[in-house]
Amino acid sequence: MTFADTIMFAVRLLAGTGVFLVGVHLLTANIEQLATGRIKSLFGRTADKRIANVGIGAAATAIIQSSGVSTVLIVGFVNVGIVDLYQAAAMIMGANIGTTVTAQIAALSAFPITTYIQVLVFIGIMMSMICKSDNLKKTGMILTGLGLIFIGLALMSDSMKTNHDMIQDVFEAVTDPFLLFLIGIFLTALVQSSSATTSVIIAMSVAGLTIGTGGNEVLYIILGTNIGSCVTALMSSFTAGANAKRTSLIHLMFNTFGSVIFFILLICWPGFMDATFRRWFSSEATQIAMFHTFFNLSCTVIFLPFCRGFVKISELLIKEKKADNVVTYLDERMLSSASLAISQLERETVLLSDTAMKAFRLAYRSFDKKDKSLIDPVHEQINNANSIYHSIVNYLIKLSAQSKLSDEQKISDIHNNVGDIMRIAEIADNFTKYTRRTVDKELIFSESVKKELDAMVNRVEELYALVRKIMEEKDKSLMPQIEQAENDIDAFRKKLIDGHIKRMNSGECRPECSGVYINLVSNLERLGDHLTYIAYTVK
View 1: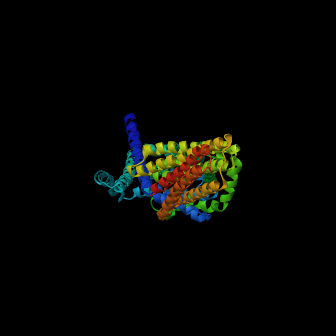
View 2: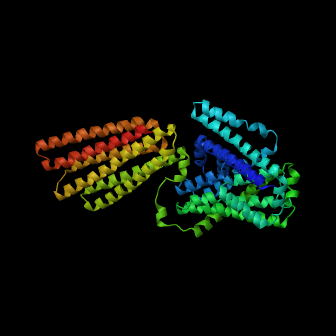
């Protein structure tokens, strides 16, 4: 084999690998965008039942065709508090099962029918060019990705068949189990996809190539790919909280312990492949894919009863830090899925509204009790609200940069909502000024005035309870109650100001109280308006 032949072989092999990876990316990215509602629904059904969570992890990964993506999402869900570590441990085991679907698809390349599947590239591209529906365009790209996967596998297999004898001599020389195991880890860590590495091995088998003596050697590489696949989740957890790091560690422990057990089994049983999968399946490609599935199923069965043990070990090795206790629902891992990111933004918006209302309650109590010592706690809550607000805005900017046209209205609504919520924090700040003025100028308000103010504030609280519920449950049937509450607050403002003017004319109220009282009542009415604006944006 000449130097030129070697270069051509490398070019064809890399081209085939590139086409395969592009196909996997198109398939994964577009399925994920189409299926975000289902993924969100799946993760919303989490429970304490381990088998159910295994099913959720397996189904989510089978849908989006990538254990890397689903594991990163699980890490993100743990980081923002949607699932706990115990649930995540079972989901990760399920994700490892779901990822074997890609290898099963790749194994189909051993059968002649897959040649015809390659025409899906043309069909898919035409659909994405002609169809106006966004969903149909995505479906077209999914078909294109599926076709490219088989074209890539065919290119890899053809390049290996052309240089079969030379490549076979090289692979036959590699028989050391530890070296093969490390090769699997390294290659998977490099491409960050166990499915890609396994599919390349399958393409080699289709080309008639065998590793080592043709015994268990190929399985050592498959075992290594499972450990290498943990790199993506580990990298994604570096900047996350303690629980996210623990989730990545559980993923690593599960795959490492399972790989070590099977490694020892294969060392002690040299004829394992011949006695099992080679006897059961005629195609070498199917044998490898089936072992990949069998391995992950077996590890799940073995380790599922020990989920709590994995959680305990992760908690011992990774300690909680005070900084990790900050409550937030935003995680950049979710940005790859607009639907999930928007869902988390909505939860963070509720958190912002709770913080702003807490500032308002403290501010009103400070005014009511003439207690200036509560002003600093009010400003602390306002600062917390500002911090959450800036986090939301930054997250919205990142999401807007990669969102689809269909998501723009939701993003715009959230942006408007956080603006209205920050007006509540400003109203709380205004109340602290009224408190200072009342205390410093020794202003006095009668008990009847205080009762009227309390009644108006109570109606504001009732309105907030309704708005918060509609934000969380999207229950539009609450709108008549919200509109009625807002009308009542407007009526309160008119009644309270008219009453104040009458008391002024009769000499019951001091003129210097007017500025504080009228502005305070007007601010309460504005608060009701901003809450109502938020309710109207709920879709």
